[in-house]
Length: 145
Image (cartoon, rainbow, N blue to C red; front, side, top):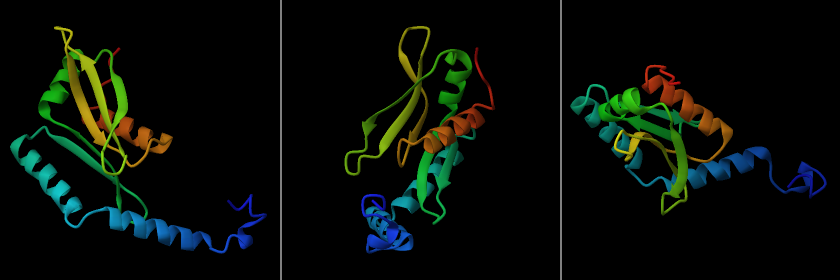
């Protein structure tokens, strides 16, 4: 925008104004209790399944950007069938369009199995990098192959 307006001074707003506007928009999009509900759910799953793994990435403003999880069945399935994986983000959360990502594989009956899931803020290299690093951490760093 600054290039098209022949400089940032011609935009009518500063970088800080833009950041504050985006922050306000993201804060309004998160319904009251959503974040607490997510954390409560994840902690409940950890109490039920000691191998349940989750990770939450936050941005500089401490707002959640990405959420990853894998339960004990996903982890054990990956240990057995994780020779080939596929990553898919074609499904979008209906109300806001954020991608829902799945890392999947195929078992010995040629059925699709899920190795992990993630709610992502966007489809950037940074989000994908965080997701794959987190996936490897959840799978104890095990690479197949």
